Image 1 (cartoon, one colour):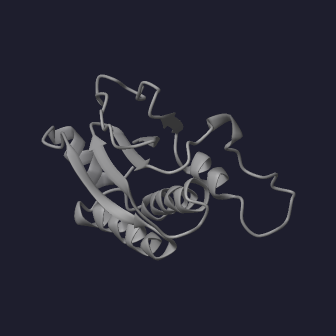
Image 2: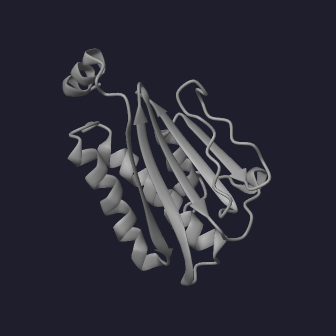
Length: 166
C-alpha cells in the first residue's frame, strides 16, 4: 500500500471520498468513463500502484453494460458510475437501465479459448476483491455494512458493486 495513503488513513481525516458521474450508454463514452476513474485516483493522489488495474476493471464493467445490457448499440439512457473510498475500502457502483443481468450467466470464457474478447469479467474478478451483481428487485448487501450503507436509487435496473480492500 502506498505510504501517502497509509499516512492519510492513520491521521483519521480520510473518512469519505465520493464522486459520481453519469455517462451516455455508447462506446464513445467508454473513454470518458476511463478518464473519470483515472482522474479520481489522480486527484486524490491515491492508489498509484493499483490505479491502472482499477481503471481497467471500471472500464471493462462499463463496456459490459454497453455490450450486454444494451446490445452494443448507442442508447439515450445513462449509466451511472460512483467511486467511493471509505476507511479501508474502495467501492465502485455502476448502475444502468438496460436488459436485466442474470448473475449466474455472467462468467468469463475459458482462458485456453484463444480469441479476442470475453475476458472482461475475468480481469474484473482478478482485480477486485468482491464483485456483486444486483437487479432492482434484490436488496443491496455491501462487503462491510458498517462502512457502506444501502443505497436506494429507484431509476436503475442493474447495479454492479465492485469492492477492493485496501
